Image (tube, rainbow, N blue to C red; front, side, top):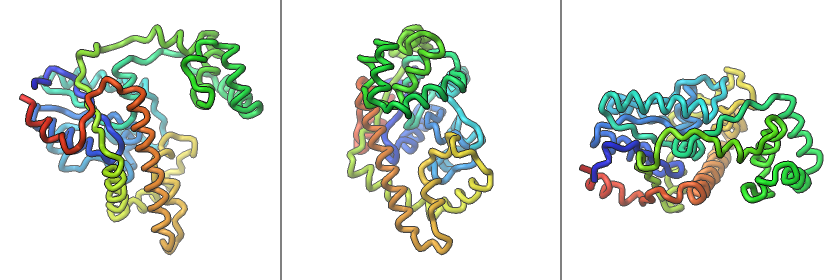
Length: 303
């Protein structure tokens, strides 16, 4: 199997072994790794994000890890631009780009392109959110369908976030979100990719998550969160979504509720893994699904 001419995409639920597999693959085919995880971009958070080790990063070139301040936000569109630039640079060096992470929207933007929708003004954003809150999701969805009938077959009536997004786009641009999608620029063809999804059994993911959280606490995750707090990051910033920050901030001064905190982080991480699997079922149907115990066999087939 010769995949050296491809752009290799590796995804899977959290704690499924993506990073290790990517490094093993990179060693075999002269690859360089590009991050596709929306939380791995923040430079101040290493432990809670399980950033690849110093050893791995010294052996294999890693890109787009820990380059942005936790005080800043970062969009999928910004990631796509940086990722395309890195792919080009890696190919010029005659190396193989390997893109690894768990953020489904990043992969979707790379494979399918990203619609260049104008920025939504704060006034329109606030107006739409106030309306949704005032009349409730059921009535809000009815208004959305009246405004933009294309949403009926694309958005579930219970999907609050996508309903709000579609409503604000129409209010801002007088065009359907799905009209914008039709005019999306695609940078690559499907044949350019080798798409791999590590389809780990739920029980393996659950066990790996528990082990990972124990390691994080021992490695200093509590002190990492204390340093994060000193930066006075606004609570609506993306970095506050990093699993573990809010939970560790509930820790008592004497650490007497540490076991409770670890359990909360575990539950939150399991829920995140479940969402990743759900995304994969809906958006990664044509990806090559591979069980963790088959990864070594896959590597042996590569020429």
